[in-house]
Length: 263
Image 1 (tube, rainbow, N blue to C red):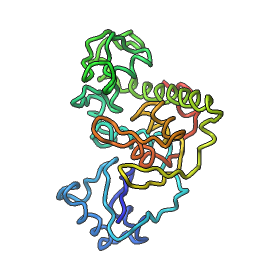
Image 2: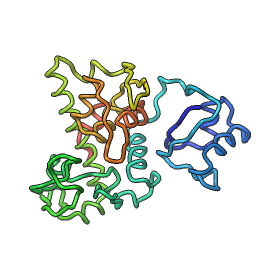
Image 3: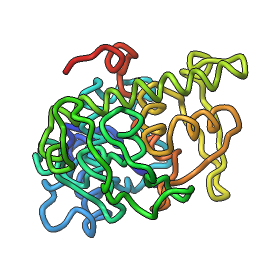
Image 4: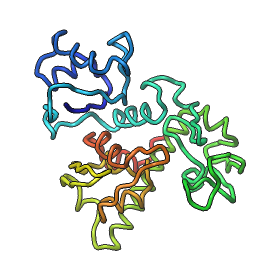
């Protein structure tokens, strides 16, 4: 069997057609029955970012070179997974998890400090020298008019600008780190690289969207070490960087999508 991450516009029939070449009820019901526990009683209630088991296939059948969508599609898929709410749900922007990460893309103190929105003397650093979670006891800088955590969580446009700023910062940091070894991101794009994750081998095609997603999960230096050293890391909840690089890879994303300000 294989796994598939639900994308914007997917239905069980469309997914069945991708993998079996047949979108009939008999085909999509095989997928539904294998995933009934996570989908629920209504087969129409699949959500972007949901991972489905595809029974009866060992490798995905869609053209591996085909794009999953554009930059906005990638953001919607990432936001749905990060927030746990389906694409288009305005509640995504108000989500806060148990470690105090906030918003559609689960921003933390350290990232918002780097992006110039927030200041605190002792930020959450994920097991480093900071506090054990994001407490948001610091001060806001008024960048884009944000003066509080509440204002940030109720400002969709600010969060959408913020994720683009985060991508741009990580892109620069990754390239700067790679240049120290005489390389650049361009050296890796389109390459298939094999990694070992928890004793299992996984081969992934390196793409811009996958790099951005992986860096959002584990930071620019975590992504750079993945490319340079095959170093696989996971977040506090056990989510592997490989999952983000793979699941959110393959979108038609160009540097100008996030390096050029749009907000």
